Image (tube, rainbow, N blue to C red; front, top):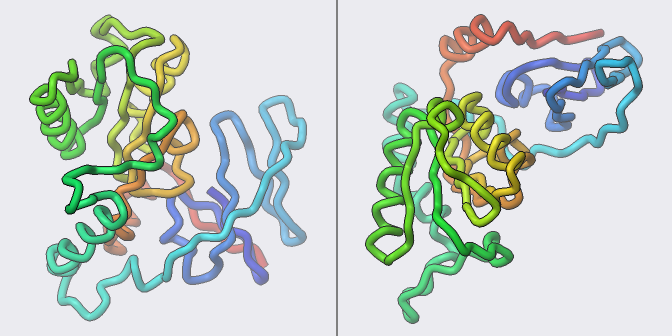
Length: 235
């Protein structure tokens, strides 16, 4: 993604890398290239044709990605859990009626099985979600996203495929969702990141609203070295 600032432009794999400098961001799709110069940013496709882009405003504070007075990031995330749960459930649980209302999914028309696809800890959440649906008579199953496209899982237009990914950028989960879209299945992203690849790829997005994930400077550097992404200020 690209950060667009008054004093420079920034290229990074996640917003925390440049949020202290700008809250204006351009999301790049697969196959798009960005040219960053002192006088602006140009986005083009693989043929060199300029692509129209929109600048979005990030609606969170830089402090959300820092330790906020806690001794370490794990301590911060533990103590944020009650608030994160309240944010996630607010406006979605009607205690008087005993119902859960998800307005974001009101347009869904599920008529077939539900497939959860996820990796890591998100896969554990998917296992629980599938179990809850099965207890209510809904045919549901959780799959490791890395195996979903290679195990010849039956999926068609009546299948609802739910991708669970905190970042919304998990490569294996994205691959599974794209395959589901290719065969015409309905897709839903359960993610914590507004504007992420999963949210933009799927028909519907259900945001966890748990707040920004704390990422230490050491982890940011490790991510950058693995993905070969750089934060490049241009003056």
